Image 1 (cartoon, rainbow, N blue to C red):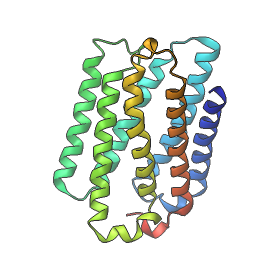
Image 2: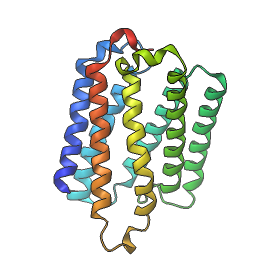
Image 3: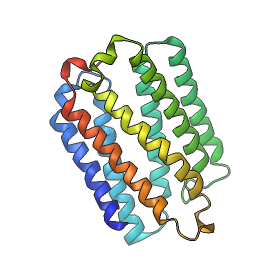
Image 4: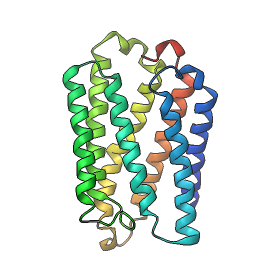
Length: 213
C-alpha cells in the first residue's frame, strides 16, 4: 500500500507538470486556477506523508485546510461555468452550507488533530450533485458534440469517479478500527485517486484550446 501511495503522489505531480505544459489551452479561462490547486495538493500530500512518517501522526490540520480550499474552489468553479441561474444559486448555497458546517464542526472535532469528517462528506455530496448539474447542461446543449475536447469535462469525469467511490470509504473509515482488515478499502481509495488524476492528464492532453467553454 505504501508503494501505491507513492504512485498516487507521482500521478499528482505528473498531472501538475502536464498542466503547466498545456497551460496555454486554458490560461484565459477560470480553469487557470485549477493548475494552482494541482500544485497545492501535490505539495500538501508530500508534506503530509513526510509529517506522518517522520515527525508526527497528527497531520490533520494541513488536510483540513486543503479540503476547505479544494471544495470551495471546485464548487465556485462549476458555478462560473453553469448557465442555468437556478443551478448557480444551488451551487452557491452548497458552498455556504459547507463552509458553515466546517465552522460549526470545529466545536466538536479539533481542527489540529482530527479530520473534519462530517463537513467532508457534505462537501463531497454537494460536489457530486454539482458535477451532475454540469453534465446535464452539457448533454442538453450543442456542447455535447465537443465534450471530449473540453478540459472541464475530463476534470468532471475524474471528480465524479473519485468522490462517488470515496464517500462510502469515508463513511466506513470512521469505523475502521472495528474492522478486521481495512487494507482493501484503502487500496480502492488510493486507486480511485490515481484514476482521477489520469483523467485530468487525459484532459490536458486531449482538450482543444477552442473548446474551453
